[in-house]
Amino acid sequence: MPHVVTIERHILEMQKEYPSATGDFSALMYDIAFAAKIIGSSVRKAGLVDILGLTGSENVQGEKVQKLDDFANDTIFRALDHTGRLCCMASEEIEGLIEIPKEFNCGKYVLAFDPLDGSSNIDANVSIGTIFSIFQKVSKKERGTIEDCLQQGKKQVAAGYIIYGSSTMLVYTAGNGVHGFTLDPSIGEFLLSHSYIITPKRGKIYSCNEGNYAKWDTNLQKYIDYIKTPDKASGRPYKSRYIGSLVADFHRNLLYGGIFIYPADKSNPNGKLRLLYEANPLAFIVEQAGGAASDGEIDIMEKTAEELHERSPLIIGSYEDVREVEDFLSGKRT
Image 1 (cartoon, rainbow, N blue to C red):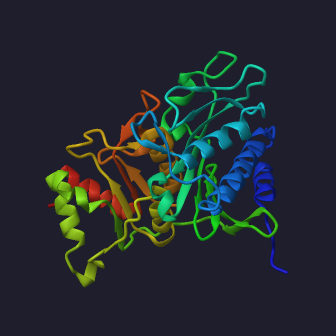
Image 2: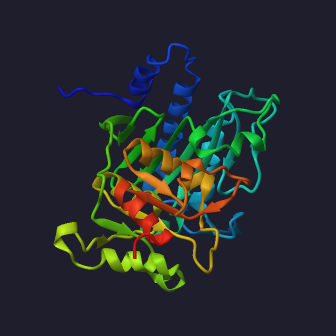
Image 3: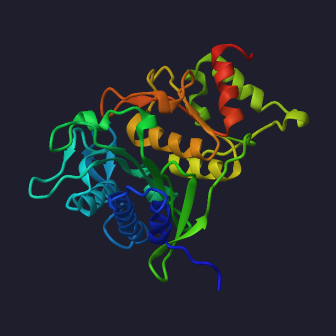
């Protein structure tokens, strides 16, 4: 019989490397996995129950809210609000800080999350996902504050995502490599399927919305033209693969190598993706897998958010590809 490792067993074994660990972090990760099972179950039933379509409202980003967005956000909150492991939360779907209800104890961790990335693709049955980031509490007050959320990316203690596709998979890092777990629906457990994921140093896939090409900086346009120009010696042209669901595009490139680009443009001079809920956690993951993440000038993990819904350009993926884009953007390459 093959060696079977559940996510709970994996986390507990990793915990042994930290003699001072209290078990709170391990329990928090298992709470997130539990919420992922609930969300994944509802995603699989979409179309059979009244959970597809729009709610008729807009979120803080000015985006139309899908029913599954609301469901995922509420599921994560209710799975974690009472555990005593979090001091506060922040969600891409909620304008302000999410406080822990006063009847529950507060813990030493902060959770920032995008409850359902790629929600515009829900009705088309495209892979979507949940992204999360965990920090330690730094404020002195009993309950969490904005200060606890607005920390430098490299202060994250863990980050991960769950992808709801042909299978449900949870990928996370706590600074000791990147590990992936696939949900076995027959037993309801996440089982270790990808241990110590390493992304290739250079890929052959580029992922971006080329419909915005005319809005981009000319140096970025030169880069896109460059990787589309055939050259066998350097492995060009690259293949264009763009799903439009960040988790799905990132997951594919993490495993196969490649680069995802969502730059600043004339419509979004500060970029479009959210630093806390998307860029930060994926940057932590890709760096642990040997890749890189940048806003075009500095590494994402070096940035400190000044507000909960701060946006950022994102260039993320194989290490050499990210650095090459930076060289083009700075004018070092033409």
